[in-house]
Length: 345
Image (cartoon, rainbow, N blue to C red):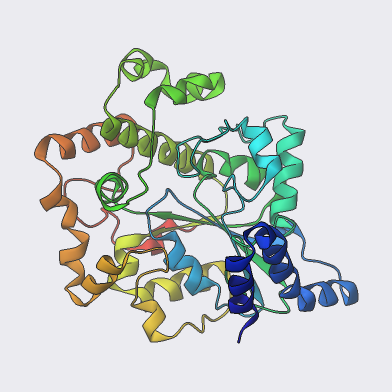
């Protein structure tokens, strides 16, 4: 019996012991890592890989693939409020708010924010670790961390400025993302467009022309659209001039081996050892229904939003993309860029 199964069995009989058992499971799997860091210096923040995207963009799948890089330990969503008390405090996270809720921090690249700098240093040094972040032990003797995050799009410039990690930004067609958030996930993604207006710097830098309109949005679908458009606009703006790699979910789905080879060669990451089955499967976060459809034609799956969203909903997505000057996608299924090769700086 594996340690994980043993912990689950004990936890089912003694629920109060669950947190301690989960911590014991995490720490037991970090013994090799701790021993390595005694013998040699722990990885510096600049050696970490940050994989950022909006939620429901395929980042879990890509993270599982990148985690097969030699001596790379995946740290899964350290900015999930369940994983860090410090993050909840910095975000002033309300009690009872679900982790999937849209509550994101905006930081200017050169912001004077020592509390956030200290937090991100802990993230990049692999110090924020829980049962959730360490769901997968991908290396017992890691020399770098792969940080997978969906809540950092509006802080990437700050992270790059402060620590210079390797940055990978994953994009998926916003209509597909919103369709997935609004209709395909049982635990819905509650969003209020007005929450964007609570950060003065964000309003001044990106939102001033649309404040009145955003104040009047009451439809949850449109709120999700606005959130996607804003956080991706901020990310693309902040990544300009910073060394990063922009990869598109659609090209990755169609040509995973070619796209991953370009990514690894461009960023000098080494050779991915992911199996063919991993390259052509859904992530562990995907529902069984979606897994069953994997055998269908990839383009049929990628174009699902064209059939499932109304023309009015699609127009809403396109309108906010235009307002936020996001030109990588349009009314078609595939990105307007021919390949992710153009996305590296």
